[in-house]
Image (cartoon, rainbow, N blue to C red; front, top):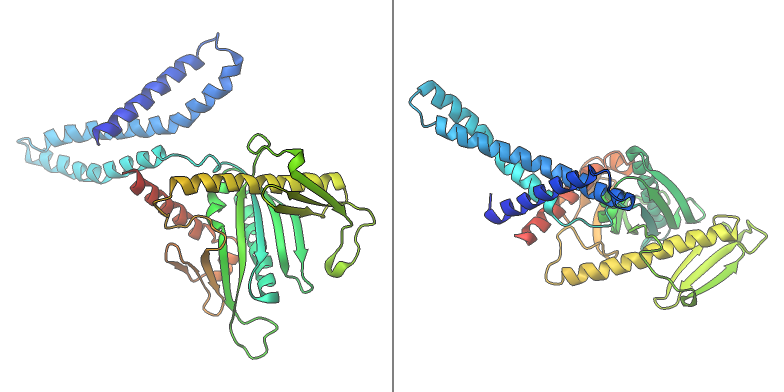
Length: 357
């Protein structure tokens, strides 16, 4: 293990012991307990991994001494165990390096999911609806709560736009690489000649923001109210309950009309606006940090084509990591989405480790 890394790990272990002593102090101010407890619990997995590595290193030193002894049987046994440890030690070091990587503060947050139909007309809208339902089913598999916030439907079941809120443990960490252009290749139900069409939908996954994360001044908002309407302009509400909020400094516009209460629609619209503004801030900071390097798994840019769903061939291809799965039904059904998400997370970790070295 490099000396610099070893010294860094020693400091973390020392800090862990300090926190343990502080938390055991009966005179510790109640206001400090939550903060110190979180730091202690965050450090505990790291310290346990370091203890496992140090134990393995001690065992290796003992086995190395035994492998040079006079007893042939003992030498062979020690060498056999040395081979196992020599394979294990790099894995333990790699695990610790991954744990030391700076964490994205947004990873543990809930998320706002936005899916919009792109090029391809009605077929694009139908695909957008399928993607939205794919994430709904995936959320159910993960035990997350999925709330539909806004849906703009077309006449035959497609979605021009759909927005959902996803609440659960590590939602943004697992979904953040879904942002971008998703392309579909298939024969539309309305196509008589059997030709394969290509259309697209755009996905944006935004970390949910709290009021303390983004300061929004009342003077920067224009709030318009209007009457909610269903597909084709059919009135579904006789009062002006729908809300459109324009953030004047950025030009961002958010509309909500799913609730019958103007107050509830405004609260939902502010939630989406706050998430979009927070994501803008995060993207600016990320651009500044990565000005000289672009991650292979992508920046989350919504204009970047990230994945193709080819129905005739039954395959899903993620272009960022050259991954292809021939199980399109299970991916669209949500149950195999982890088989794409896990490699994306692993590739991001590899990229960040390379940048640290």
